[in-house]
Length: 80
Image (tube, rainbow, N blue to C red; front, side, top):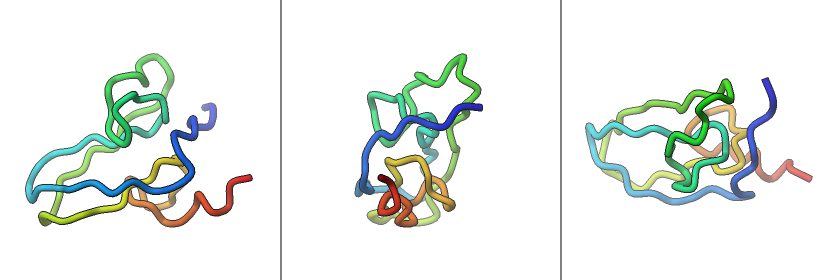
């Protein structure tokens, strides 16, 4: 499988609502970053489904290189 498109070189702060379902874009092609808009169809990528455990501000990955998807782990700092 090809590497995901880099949608951004930083994290993005989003407000999550407890018990709400979210689909994080794993391919990097969504026009609704950091969330999936279906642009991955036919690419072999699958969005990451998660349910917020609490209402809070979360920092989601835009570079698509995180080891803790969908959350940012600082991997964007290693991009050249």
